[in-house]
Image 1 (cartoon, helix red, strand yellow):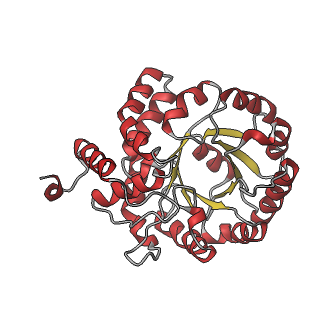
Image 2 (cartoon, rainbow, N blue to C red):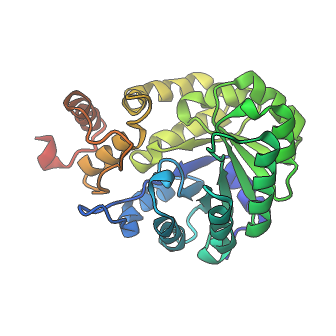
Length: 307
């Protein structure tokens, strides 16, 4: 049973955790390995979990693998958080996933911004409209390129079903204008994770996306609580505490983003396999050692491994 619209809206103002896609030693996806990750995130107070997001290597999955993740992960979540299904790639594939989302147990869909090199701003609007119609669920836009312009962004926010925008560009002044033009019925979410949440919150965004929740959701939730209390000093202190982790993720032109999360999980005792090419895998020795030291300091290494 899907959440009512107001339940989805409320969840989007919190933390939108982006789940990894677990792989086995033969590079086959193993959704069940998410169980302990989901349990810890839900217990910590993460509001929504997204399957087939960028931390889930959406563009590295075959369509059949993306289908399987969308079909199996909601049952693992068991209603403990809102479930958001990432859809995208070709219009045919995006609509196919969107049509199945409700039956698969999703509460909303997140539409990846088309990466086609010949994207037209009005073409993006047409794309989202078709996908939203296919879903019949609340729609979250994942905006990674604001170069399409404010008129197109405003048109996207007017597509029936759109309730939120994950703003994943550092152009915060454009964000402020977009919030004003979209109106009160569309929530804007910081789509650049914890480090960018304070400035975006100050401009009217609510909540943020997070890949960190796969590893230490409690740290993400503490940052959200500080922001909701208006305590930016405490929020920034929490962000400073995760800086080393996020810095490792940003290495190799951000190509280590997923790899660091997966390596951290495996070091902490949850084997989720490798990150697929073209992501950076394995981590270079220096980065791997720095990650291990960081996790030891956070008390996340199994006792035998820490000795």
